[in-house]
Length: 124
Image (cartoon, rainbow, N blue to C red; front, side, top):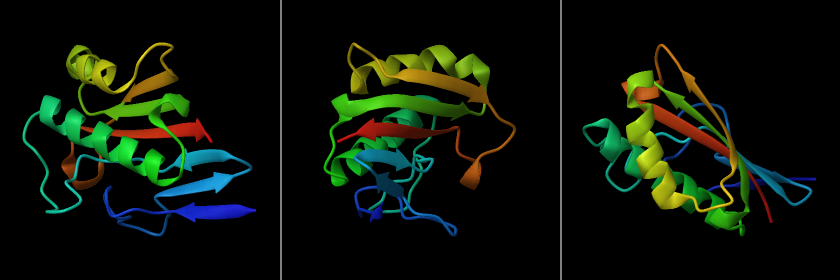
């Protein structure tokens, strides 16, 4: 049985998808971008965007009834691979050891022309 997860503490879906879905105690998030859910603003610069995106992701996972520590896999989509080290610094502020497994992929373009997007899988 699927359960739709949604929260106003993360950006609303901008298409025909759910913010997250829970199935059998596992939470699968959609990609989360660095939009301030209260104002709709997108911060300037990759560090500020990473902070906002990770904050949004953490809020979404917590809204599911899970915890950030229960995230087991992330996928990070970045606009510029040269920002990898900067994004890693912000990533380590939000995730502690043992770190989730992760993929990081450079992409040509992201929604709203943001610099990164992150998705996760967590258990409850």
